[in-house]
Image 1 (tube, rainbow, N blue to C red):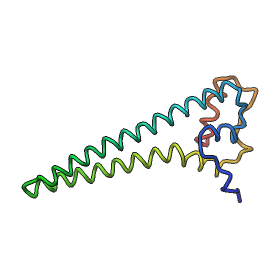
Image 2 (image 1 turned 120 degrees about the vertical axis):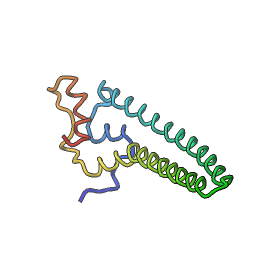
Image 3 (image 1 turned 180 degrees about the vertical axis):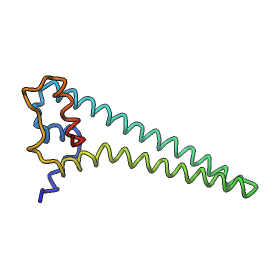
Image 4 (image 1 turned 90 degrees about the horizontal axis):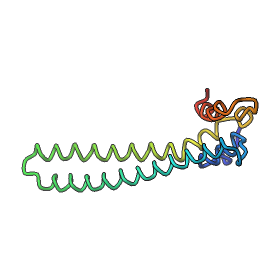
Length: 136
């Protein structure tokens, strides 16, 4: 059984440990930059969704409190539940992509079966790690 304590916690660690890439190679640098930027963008999106969702939830709460008839209260309640579900799903997806996916891949992928073949041309070398992520 594989030791689950040796899983990686970021994409750059995954590229370094599991793909056996030389850190000075151009492919490693490009992949590290792309996934670093993607990770930062996703964390910013998480913050924006949280902030906008909180403001909208407060607005819906005020509408719920001010509603005079039952139909408006029910409508505000439905929208409020939808906002909470949307925020929860967004948070879950961002956490899965940024944190849990590298951990899962490193826990279940054999280090010896992934990596680069020096005989491949650069475009294929660039796509190979992504194909290994997908298990192709």
